[in-house]
Image (cartoon, rainbow, N blue to C red):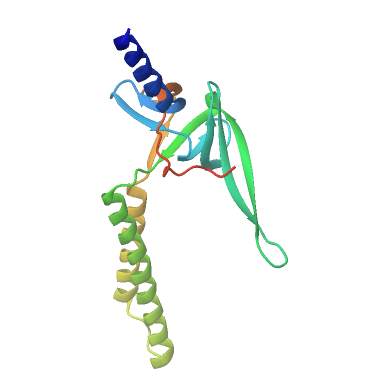
Length: 191
C-alpha cells in the first residue's frame, strides 16, 4: 500500500509539471527534415493566393488555425501608442514560409552586408565630394569598386534567405500535439 501511494504521488507530481500544446510543424517527407514553430515564436509567411507577406509572433495554434499578433505603433500627440493586432490565419491557406535560423554564419553574412553598404556608400560619397572640390572628372575605377562592394553585400544578404513552398518538393505544414516548453524566459507575444 505504501508503494502504491508513493507511486501515485510521483505520477501526480510528474503530470502537473508537464503540459501539452499544439506545435506548427513544417516538414519534408523526402528529406526527413522538420522545423517546428511554438507559441511565442516569430513567423513570416505568405498566403497561397496573395502577394502580401504576414509576420508576427504566434499566440495560439489550433488544429486548423494560427493566431499571430503584431504590435503597431500609432503616432499620438505627445507619445506613441502601441496597438496589438491579431490575425487569424487558416493553416491550409499558407503557401510559403520564410525561415531564417539564428546561426553564426547568418550573423556574419548580415554583418558583411551592413559593412559593405557603409563602405560602398563612403566610397561613392568621397568620390563625389572629391569631384566637386577639385573639379576633375571622377575615375571610373572608383565607381566600379563601390558598385562591386555594394553588389557583393547584396548577394551575401540574399544567399541566407530560406523559402519553403508548401506542397512543392515534399514540404507540408501541419499541427502536432507536442510537449510544451515550460521555460519562463521564452519570449511570448504580448496580448
